[in-house]
Length: 119
Length: 112
Image (cartoon, rainbow over all chains, first blue to last red; front, side):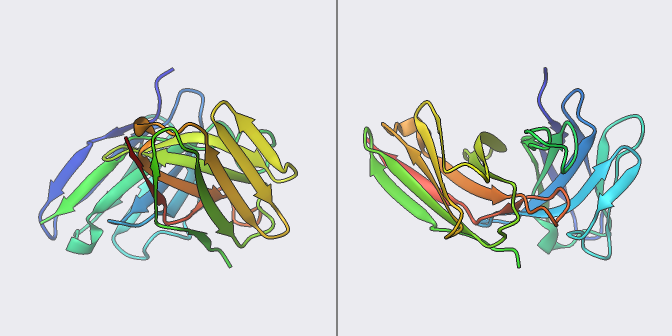
């Protein structure tokens, strides 16, 4: 069973360009979470999605950032008009079921991350 | 409020035990987690503990939970150089949806 896949692993963008980060959850997982890790810091929650639904986007910046998890295909985190402060590692995690389902079915498994550098 | 605190650095000698400490603020957290991050890599789930437990042991890893003091620790027995990494504790508060709240991470350095 393949783990959580993210691509690209490294992404370089110039200021003002768009960045698209992709995440394929583990097989059988229908819940996806995105986190951002700034240099020398811990991970900060951004958004939690199920298929075709955004469940919690309380950690997403109000502008330029959006996320989706379509019925078919990977989850996408999109950053428009990137700025230098967007440079970070972006991690995706998936879980089999969601919060409150009991046991360890909401345990989150992380992908290798996408390291975004904005020049 | 949501705040998870860890000390930033720990240095031990190979073969010694390492103890990484963490304090959290949300008493509603059902599960508490330890993740390991090696340089340039993602987070690897090491272990987790259910909030009604005091202790969980898994091979070289022992997790202790003091719910009254909101204190969590990870003990690594017989620490090896391959254990050098950053260790993150995380809580999963019941009233915060599915998100994990992470500490800043403790960088463990194991010297031969």
